[in-house]
Image (cartoon, rainbow, N blue to C red; front, side):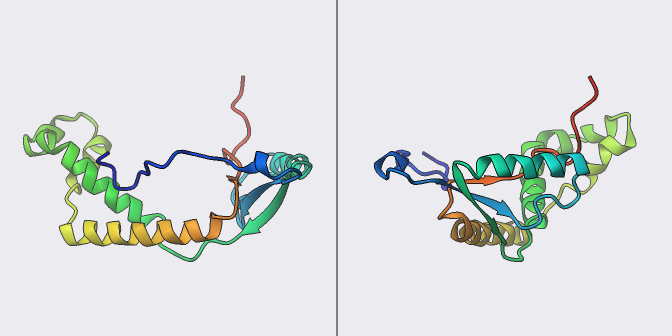
Length: 149
């Protein structure tokens, strides 16, 4: 009830009320950028199989700061959650320097956090605008092939 990003609406999927309606799947324009060739091939094959039961469309998200915004929010929330640990000087007790690094820069200015939260809202609306007509967003789940057995 305290989560402002959550909805209390019941989920309803109306595909059964429309006979013959295919699922609508969205694929981000660069979904396979940076993935291994075998993953790209498997993904393309999966899309061909899905095309039997769904329409598959390529979509482009607006150019927005998708990486810096959540990082700013996560740093601020992490600093808040770890406040007692950080303020008590406990981070300096960590034995590995790379473990201490995130705590050394844990302070996030309130103005940066609030701006990130506002931009987060704009990002959510933009993504909703692009994806609202689709049933699912499909993408490779990993950039590399399966791990060795």
